[in-house]
Structures are given as C-alpha cells and as structure tokens.
Image 1 (cartoon, rainbow over the protein chains, first blue to last red):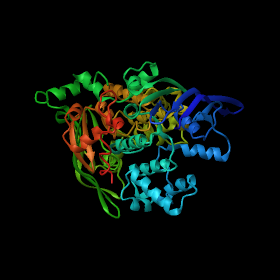
Image 2: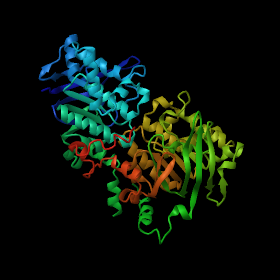
Image 3: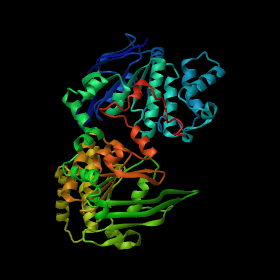
Image 4: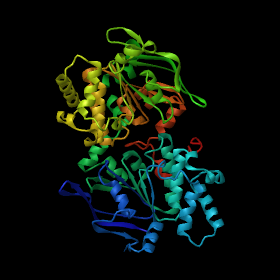
Length: 267
Length: 310
C-alpha cells in the first residue's frame, strides 16, 4: 500500500523589499508519514504553513531541502513519474464554487481524470466509471447529475463532485484542504461523514487540513499542530485536544468556541 | 466570556418569574411583524413576519444559514434595503436612552441620515474588505465625524479617530496606513471602531469574525465584550456559528427561511432546544471536548442529512 512521507522538509520563500532580500521560512523541518487507513489532521491558524504543506505534497512547490517519499521512494522529475505520483496523491480544495469549471458538465469533470489515468478505457467504460463515482458520493440519480453543470448544484453537492473527481484516479492518499469550511453548517458533517466512509472503504491515507479543532478531533486519528512553520505538537486526536501540552495548542483550544465551558461556569 | 455578562444570563436562566428579562422591561429596539420581499422575476419573501425585541445592553444572537434572511433583516432594521427589496409590513421602533420612541419607517432625508450610525451602527459582512483601498484609515474614520459632527475641526477629528483606534487595540500611528497595510484582524478592528465612533446604542454585527482564524476571532470577541461592558451598547450578533453565539449571547434567535423558528436564552437553547431545526443546527457542530460528534469517525450515523440538502 501507499505511504507518503515528508522527511525533514524545509520550504523558504524569497521576499523582496526594494533592494533588500529576505527569506521567509514557511515550513521548518517538518517530518510526518501518511499511512493507508489513517486520517491525520493538520491544524493551525492562518499563515502557519498548512497550505504550503499541501502545495508541497501536491508538488506544486518543491522543497528547499528535505525529501518527499512515495512508498518509500523519492519521486522522479519525468512526466511519467509526475503522472504516476498524481494518480496516487489527490487533493480536495477548499472552495467548491471556484474549483469546478462553470463551462463543463459534471460528467466532463469526472471523465477527464478517469480517461487521463486509465488511457486504455473505452468511452463506455469511462462513462460507467463516472456514474459509479457519482453513486459513491451519493449524487443520485446519477444520470441526471452527470448532465448538470456546476451552477445547478448546491455547495455541498459541488464538494461531493470535487471529492469524486479526487477519487477518479483511484489514489491511495487524499489531501483535503479545509474541505468543508465554505459549506453551510448543517451540511458540513454530511460531507465529512462521506469523506470518512470513503476513507474506510478505500483504505485511504487522508491529510485533513483545517483550523476547526472540533471537527479535527472527531474526524481524525492523529492531530498535528502547526505554528510558524513547525509542528509543535502531535499525537492521537483526543490526547492532543483534551490534554494539550504545548502552549500554542492550549491557546488554540482556549480560543475555540465551546458552549460547554459557559455551561460549566453557570453551574 | 466576561464577568459582566455572566449575571445577566444567570438571572435569566434561573428566575424569569422573579425578575422579568431585560428585553421586556427596557427594550432598545423592537421589531414588530416585519416582512421584506424581493420583487424580482418571482417575489421572494426573505423576512416573513419577524418580531424581535432587543434589551438595552443585551447581546442578541441571530443564527441561521446562508439565504435564511438574517442579513436582509439587519438591513431592514437600518433602512438600508434597496429595490427590488421592499418592506411590505411591520415596524421597527427604536427606544432612545432618554425615553423617546422613534419609528424608523417614517424617517427620511436628513432625519434618517442623523439616525443611522448615531443610534444604530453596523459592522458589515466581509467588513475586512469594506474599507476603501485608496484612502488612509485617518480619512475614512474622519469621514464619520465630518458628516455627523460638522462642527469638529480637522485636528479634533484626527484626535478622536486616534482615540477610537486605541479603544479597539490598534496603535494610533496606524491612522496613516492604507487598508492593505493592515492585517485582516486589524481591518476588522478598524471597522468596529468606525461603528463605535458616535457612541451608538445598538450595534448590528453581521458575521464580523467569520473570515478570521480562531485566535484572532477570540481577541476581537473579547474586545467587543469589554467595550460593551464599558459603553453599554446592545449588540445584534449575526452568524451561522452557533457554538460561538452560545458562548457570547444573552439570548439567541434561530432563523430559517425568513422566520424566527425559536428564541430563547442562550443556555436554554443549548440544553433544551425545542424546534427540530435548532436541534439539527446544534448537532452540526461536534463538541470540542465532549463525546458528541463521535459518529464522524466511527461512521455509525452515515449521511443522515443527504436528503435535506437537495
């Protein structure tokens, strides 16, 4: 099975301010492993480097130093190596309104990755695979949804399409960057449940990037807390949130809304 | 959140019979049977016979999802609606500190200009992006005084603007900054400072912290609660984040499809929700520390709501 490993990765950006150059270390010696069947949450406030990690994992950025290993091996630079990597590692983006092309039907969105990663499939096979994907994310009736365009879907339905698209190449690793933060609250858990179920069915390794501690706790097996580019605390989800050791984790937890706390104060 | 807030909620939760709740005795804003329609191709009733009372110095939470009419209600209260929106019925009355009652629907022209922002101010949704990018903070804050306090000199305006910034925890020298030079949290504070400029008795905050991350959000909430204790304004806090409202509000009204489906003191709503929709909303938020929400990981309840979304 597929594991994705970050080994001592550093990513620096160069900032220019007039003549002076400056380096910003967005990711500072980060190491972790994503394993099949496990969900790892990456939490932290904005600017902590969470999304840079996602970009590195998607190979949209290359590390300044350190290595990213897929199945224990470094990834080559050739086109075929990149393609093989992307058939194993897929991403669900934050904004379901921006990540689907308004011009194309849902079927087109799903058929493209299927055909791209399975070049030998016939058109009929591709179509049946598309319908199967729609069933998996529970967009029934599938024929009808396949013919629709993004503007005819609600936010939650669009995000399901985005999840189906990520699953199309049959990846082993899924990176989900704030997958529910743009959705209405009453449908967030539905989408998370769906992700959780697919993760169990496909034995996926999931990296769940979020700033919402409550869903991170219930959705993930492990939590990593990121602060200024470093992972300051990591461990089983309940341990990290119920008994935070690092000062920053404590700050983060104290800042999260928790009605129980007020109830306790009043009692 | 703050010590000043706890006794209110306490009193309301325990002895409503002994001491009637503040919003009944000393209201600052009453909304009676307000209806708003958008008369576009099809007529949409966005606010449907809503009645609400806001007590003096109270924090009223207005919870609801996108499209439920909560922003339209806020705009209706402030008379900010533009066609095709039409107020089709009901009244909004403002009860001033001095005991006058103002029916906002009869205000127009200069009276309306004087009333808005002086009495009821607003922090708009996406407030971070509602500052003018080509004007300095000093000029944008000063505008409020130039309009409402025409007798003030330029120096007084700058001085007052500086005081306002310090009040919300932003350094005075930021007056010379342009909005893009400030972080999101600081821009949000500037908007709050602007809403407080004329010492209003009611502040309507429409999703004031939604785009901010939790640590900054907490700082701003503490700031608002401190200022409220100091200055005694009432707040209508609009958001979809129910756990947040439960923490900071005295009372909460839950809105759906233009109607208020449930209204109760915050802790009553949390411990004994009556309406099904309130229960759905509450169950949408897994608990930070308790066991509630475990099913996400264990998968025991799978997609219970997939029908409701369509």
